Image (cartoon, rainbow over all chains, first blue to last red; front, side, top):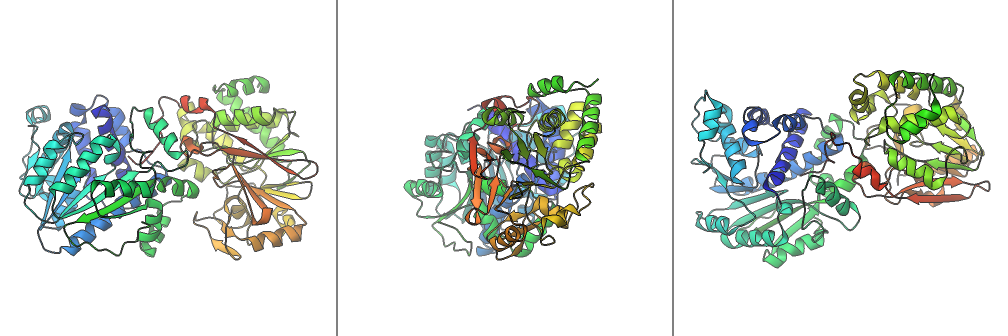
Length: 336
Length: 304
C-alpha cells in the first residue's frame, strides 16, 4: 500500500480529535498548536494542502464525535492506570504510528518520570519535528529548546530526517511494515516498564508484517503493557462495506476480516506468545468504563440521533490490552 | 411554468431543478398539506416506507421493486433528508409525486424534517452547496411544518415516525395538536417523532435526548384504547429492514439499505393488504449509489 495513503489516515485522526476538542468533549491544550503547524508546513509535505487543511477543521457528525471520544478516553484511562501503578518510577510510553497525536505534550509536562518515544514513517517524523521545533509551547512541553525561525522554507528544507532525540522525548523514523530495525532498537532500550500504544495502526499492515511486529515487541521488551485499538470486521456485512469504502481511497485493511471477532483477535495475540490478553469492543467500553457523570456530560454536549449507528460502529472496533514481565491488574471491565 | 413530469424525470437522474421551480413546488405542496389532518386517514392496500435519508438511488429501487406510482399507494414515515448524499433530490422527488398523485402518496413528518436537525445532519449544507444560498433549504423547511404527524390505515394501523408519548392516550388528542411549527424539544408532537419502543415497564428516558422509551404495556394500552391492531413506525435502523416487537403489536420499518453507505443493512417496506395482512418486501442497496458518491464529497467516515 502506498505510504502517502496510510499517512493520510493521520489527517482523519487529527480532524476527529480536533472536532471533539472544539465540541468540548476533551480538553486538548495543544491541538490548536498542531493545526497551526499544519497550516504552516503542510505545503512542504502534501500535494493538496488546502484540501487537507479544510478537511481538518470540518465538523464531524455526533456519531463520529462520540466514537472518537471513547477511543481517546479508553486509551487515556489505560495510560492513567499505567502511570498510577508505577507512580514515580521511571516508565516509558512508545506510541507506534503516532502521527500528529497530541498526547505526548500533556503527558510529558505532567509526568517527569516518563520517557516518550513516538515512531512513524520518516516523512511523518520530519513533518511533526518541524511543527514541534517551530512552536514554543510544544517544544517546551517536551523540554526541547525553542528557537524562532524566520524562513520556514529554509528551515523545513534543512531539517534532518533523524527525528528528535531529546532527554525525555524521542521522535523516531521507522517504517513498521518492516520491523527488523525497530526490533533491534527495542532490544537496546534500557529496561523499564513500557506501555506500547498501537492506535489504529496494526490494521494497515499485512498479516505477515503485523505478526513480525507483534513478535518483535513481545521479544524485545521485557516489561510491557500493550494497548491496541483496531477496527474489527465482524461477522455481518459491515466489514465488507468498510473494505469497499476504503478501497475508494486506495486504503486496504488486510487483516480486518481475518481477525473479525473479539475471539479471533484475542487468539491472534495468544498465538504470538502474549499470555495475558483482554479485549472488548468499544460499545461495551463506552457503557462500562465511563463514570455516569461523564456519560451525562457528553450526552449534554450535542444531540445524538444515531443511537443504533453508534452501536453498530463501535461494535466494530476493539481495544485489546496485554501485559508481560510486570504486574498490571486493573479494575477495567473486558468481555474477554 | 413548472412542469412536474419533467421535474420527476430530472430528479430521477439526480439533476438539479431551478430554484424558482423548487419554490413553486414547495408552495403547491403546502397548499395540499394544509388541508391534511394531523393524522391522515388511509385505506388499504398501502405500502408503508421507513427512513430514506437522502439515498435517492435506493428510493428509486424501492419504487422499482414494489411498483411505480400511481399503480401503488404509498405512505412514507418521514426522515426523507439528512445523512445521504441526495437529500434534496429525494425530498423533491417525493414532493413532485405528491402534487402529481396527491391521493396515492402520503408523507408524514420525521424528526429530521426540522430546521435544527437538518443544520447538523447535512441537508442544510447540501442545499447551500447545490444552490449557493439557503433559500431552497428554507422553502423545504416551510413544507416540513405542514407535514402530518401520523396516519391511520383502515382505522386499524396507526403509523408514526417515532412512537408514543406519555402526553397522549388517544389518536383524537393528536388531532388537537397545532402542528404547523418547528418540531418542539418536548411534548406530544416531539415524542411522536422521537420516541422508541424498548424493553421498559412503562416509560423510560430516551438516550437520544428527546422523546421517550415506551414498553409493551404502553403499546397494549394504546392499541386497546384506540381499537387498533398495529403500530407501524420507522426511526430506528434495523439490520434486517424490519422488526416486529411486543408479539407483533408494533413494527419498525427501515427503508435505507446500507445506511450512510456504511452500515451493511438491508431495507424493507411493509404492504398492508385489504385483509390487514402484512407483507414485507426486502431490498438491498443500489450498487449505483456507492459509485455515484459525488467526487467532491469526502469519503465515508470511519475511525482511522
